[in-house]
Length: 99
Image 1 (spheres, rainbow, N blue to C red):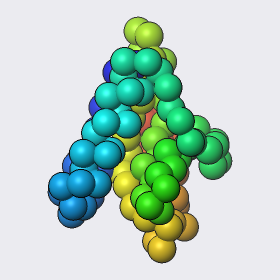
Image 2: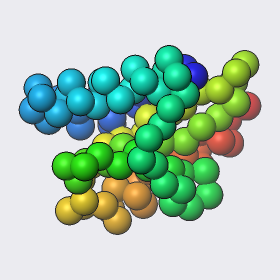
Image 3: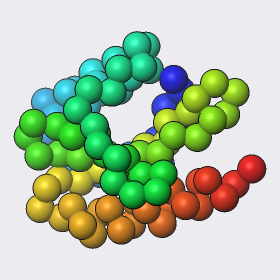
């Protein structure tokens, strides 16, 4: 599975500690190589979340482009979850409108 990272995701990841960045990157590599998502959950429409034990979340959508492409929309944590979900849902809808 190919993974594309949004600007919002890239901006968020830079605010995290090096340890958390490495944890997230290791998870993304596993997804790319093995298509293994681990702890994840469907939220609404085409929006899903990857859940981490430390409370971090990555909101994503999957769109079929050639094989499958996962779009990482943005990240956050449990504290701002509903705000992040609302923002990510809008972005996911835009991604799926594109041809």
